[in-house]
Length: 84
Image 1 (cartoon, rainbow, N blue to C red):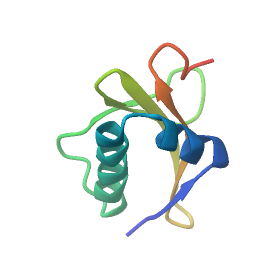
Image 2: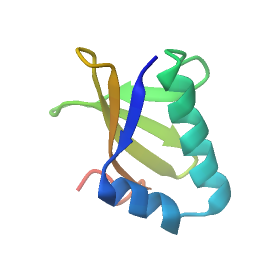
Image 3: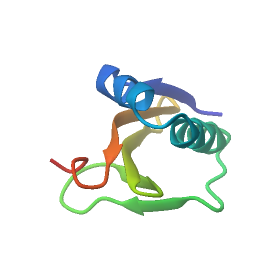
Image 4: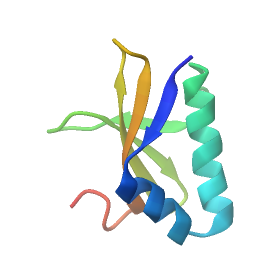
């Protein structure tokens, strides 16, 4: 089982987005923490380290640190702003 760590900016973005979407992201990360990625829209990022999780018009950028079993959530936001 992985531990989930939210960076300060990611946690702040989750508080600002619609409650339903924020709950979906939290549930998706909890599902990933159990090492189950079935049914999630995840892609490896090109040109940088990490992965992208898509839920509706929102994205989360995260990375897995396998040596200590941590999912570090780097950014969460709308699709237009997340990659900047």
